[in-house]
Structure formats: C-alpha cells, structure tokens
Image (cartoon, rainbow, N blue to C red; front, side, top):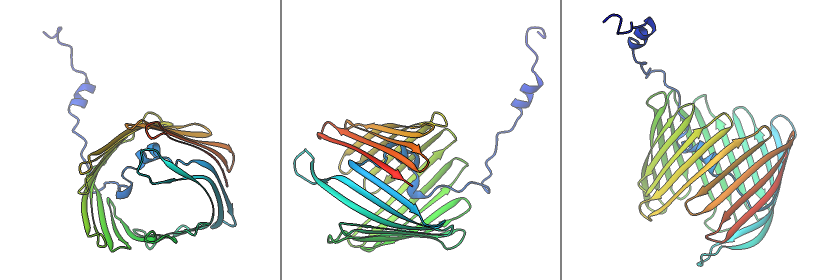
Length: 308
C-alpha cells in the first residue's frame, strides 16, 4: 500500500493546514462616494457625446488661475409629440475662469445665451468637504442650486445635500469587507411633496467592478465592468423602472492606446455610439463623436479640438 499511494509532500501539508485569510474589520479601505458607485461604467458607456463643432481653449495665467474659451456650433433638440427628433440650429460661446488650489477649487462659466454656472469645492478639514454648484438662467423655474457636505471616515463616507425647492437628502456608504461596500440614501423634495429611499452595493477587485442600486422611485440600476488588461475594459449596464416598465440594457468598451482613447457602446434600443480622443501633440487633442439611432432616425456627428 505504501508503494501505491504517493506520499504527501511538505508543500501540500502546508497548504492544507494553512488557515483561511481573515478580514481585518478594523482596517478596511475607504469606499468611493455614494453618487459615484457606477463611475467605471459611466466612463465607458456614457462619454460626453455632442453634435456639430466644438473648440475648447484653456490658458493658464499662473499655477492656480486659468481662463477658458469654448465655442460650440451644432443643433438643439426640441421636444415633439412625434417619434422623429426635431432639431434647431444653435451656437454659443462660453467664457470660464478657474481657480484651483490644494484646498479650494472655484470654477465659473458664462454663456452668450445668459446662462451662468458656478462650482465650489472647499476642503474645510482633512475629512470634511464643502461642495456647491449653481445654475442661473433667464428661463423661468430653470435656475437651481445645491450645497453638499461630504464627510470622509476611515472606512465610510456620508453626505448631506441641501438644494432649492426645499430639497434635502443624505447618503451613507460603508465598506463591510476589503471588496464589498453597502450604502443607502434618503431624500425629500418639499416643493413637489415627494420623498424616496434607496440602497446600493458595490463589489470591486483588481479585475472587475459590479454595482447594484435600487430606489423607491422605481429605479433599478445594475452595472458590471471587466478589466481585460491595463488598456482594455468591457462594460455593461441594465436600467429598469418598475413603475413605467421602461428597460434599457447596453454593452460597451473602453480602449486606451498610446496617444488616444476609444469608447463605444450599443444599447437594447439599437442606438450605437462611439467617442474618440486623439492626442496630436502636448496640449492639443482631437475629438470625434458619433451616435446613430435608426429607430428615431436621429444621427449625430461631431468633431472638436481641445487646446491647453
């Protein structure tokens, strides 16, 4: 019998006797903010698509202060009762000013159509951050503002939101293991007399990210990102509203080359999109954007340059 059964090696003995790795619940990493749990999927599946011509120029005056100029010429979609999309030609110029400091960031934008955008991010302490954004416009009931207080703990994050229209919200996310984080949110819109509650989960490793989110408003959102390599990622998401019975699923890719980045997707409605960013030189990028929706007979193509 001793000659039939092979002897057990010392390495096998050590592996079989090795205890399972325990989770150190007192030394968990800090999760990403609650509103960014779908970050990787959004980066791959929802790039900043546009139609027409776009030119962006940024000039740095010193290490902290810079000015930006943007020109856009394209079309604006007008709501209609028919299935076809109605577009109206439009063009605008945008002037911006940026102040970026390690503890303070101020960003302002003003457009020729009268809109004004402002953003503030101020690190009040190592763990507490104040964020504010506002939009002012000539159109009635279209101006809005929001103030967020973000607190970053050792293995959790919490946020308090206050906005116009008597909007109040709060969210919390906690790492429960090295890879899994769970969170929840509540909000109250006093102007519309609506309230809601939601829950979210995120599982992340070096090769994949899976997220799930459900809310009392009827929304269910699932996403999954697989990192094939350092330069290639595949992503998919699923959106379902059990109140309106609307459902959409999409798959896409994110390919980072030496001097360019290519992203694309196709969804269950038959809409396909692609977005290419090509670095021509230091501080000079060329952009191509395309989106085709055969069902709605809507075709969008755009190109642009980014300088600075």
